[in-house]
Each structure stands twice: as structure tokens, then as C-alpha cells.
Amino acid sequence: MFTSNQPECHFSLVLISLLSCTTNQARLTVSPSSSQFFKGDFVSLSCEEDDSSAGWTLRRNTSKRQRSQCGDGWGKPMNPSFNISYIYTSDSGVYWCESREGPISNMVNLTVTGGSVILQSPVLPVMEGDDITLLCKTKTTPSNLPAAFYKDGSLIRKQPTGHMTIQHVSRSDEGLYKCDISGHGESPSSWITVTDKHTTTPPPTSTPPPGFISITLPPSLFLHHCSSTTLSSCSLCVVVLLVLLVVLVRRCVHRKPEGETQTS
Image (cartoon, rainbow, N blue to C red; front, side, top):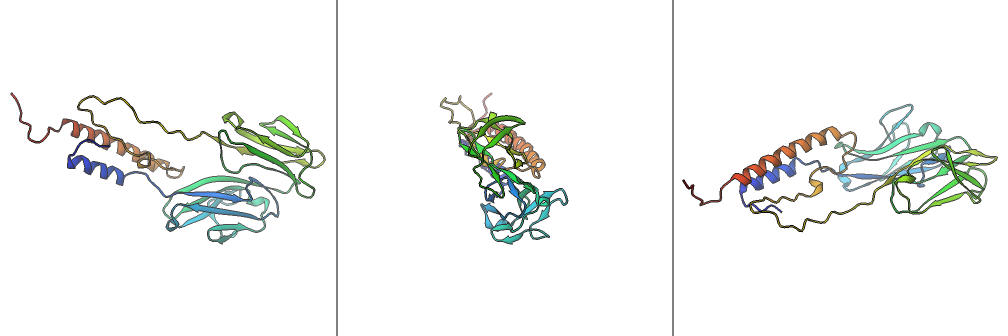
């Protein structure tokens, strides 16, 4: 909360809010929820958006083309989803949602194989403390065959049913995973990301000293989902905000209350 009643200080807060890096955000989801697919699978990607007026579309980077748009030679827009009815190995790459205003969503890495084994693993980051299940799957036989699971090239364990559950994941579980089914082959590798749990910092309980100007601004006033493409502009925005805050505090602290007379 801002304790001063000076109009000039209130105007500065308004100016800061106008210069803040708030953006509408979309979240890219994949169905079936997996980072690996067999050649010929059906895949649906959706931009789950906060603001439908932002005009989100699906883009990707592959080994053949950069920033190509869904419908431009691949995929079919089916508002709000984007469907790939028959996915090829050349469709392997990084996918994201992008709006006409510039912001982008999270990015997902999809791998398409012409082989006979895939590892079904979370395509989105997993939060610390959650459980995740990995499935080593074959294309032409039941998916409950014995499988060996590897992390960063080292064997974790062998499972008789092709399923492996990691309980209460932590940051140490983050890494590159793959699996192997004897007689059928090895899956490609996929990276599993583990994120920290969101924590809320309680407000200070101590009383500020006399004359201290207390300013509490919401975190969304600064950076909200700044993506790699907007990082430079957001960094500039932070610098501008910090300069304005310094000027704001100095003017509010040194301004004398109305009616105060100068003493000799």
C-alpha cells in the first residue's frame, strides 16, 4: 500500500503500471499427453488461452523449417485445437503458441520415431512432490512387456510390466530418460523437467520506522511469463520501473507536508 496522498506520487504509480510487462498468456497442451509418438499417430495440440482476443496460433521449429505456422503445409487448425492426423518423423521439433501481439506460451518438444518403441513421459514440467508414471510402449504388441528404464544413460530399474512410477519427484529426478524392451528395441530420449512448488512469502510483521514510505506492488506489475522472445524488452522495462521507483520514493520522502513552514 502507498501511504502518501500526494497526487504526483499516485500519477507515478499509474505510469509504472502502464509500463509494466504484463501479457496475456496461453498454455500449450498435447493430446495424447506424451513427448514421444510413433510415425502415423494422431496428435492434437491446444492453445489454452487467458484471452481469446489475443489471436493465438501454433508454430514450430523443426530441422526443415523455422517458425512455420500450423496450416502452412502441416497440421489443421480446428479452433481452439490444431490437429496432426498423421505425424511424420520430420514433424519432430519444438512447438509453441504465439499471439499476433507477440507473447508466446510454454514450449514443448515432440519426438516422432519410425522405430517400434517409445517412452510415454510427461510433456509438460512436473511440480516437485508429484508422482509421475513412465510407460515403455511398443507399436505392434501389448504395452505391458518387461522394460528397462534409464536416466542420463544409467539404468534405473527393470519393470516386469513396462510401467515405472517415480513418487514425490524432486529436482534430482530431472533429466534425460529412455527405455528398452528386449527384442523390440530402445526408445528415443526425452527430457523431464521438474519445477519448484510455488511459495508465498508472508508480509513483514515489523513496523516500519517513522517517515518510511511503504510501497507494495503486485508481482504481475513487473514480469509475467516473459518469454525468450520478449526477454530484452522486459529487461528494459524493469530498468525503467526501477528508475521511476527511485525518483518516486525520493520525491515523496523529501516533499514537505502542506502547511509546514520553514524554520530558521
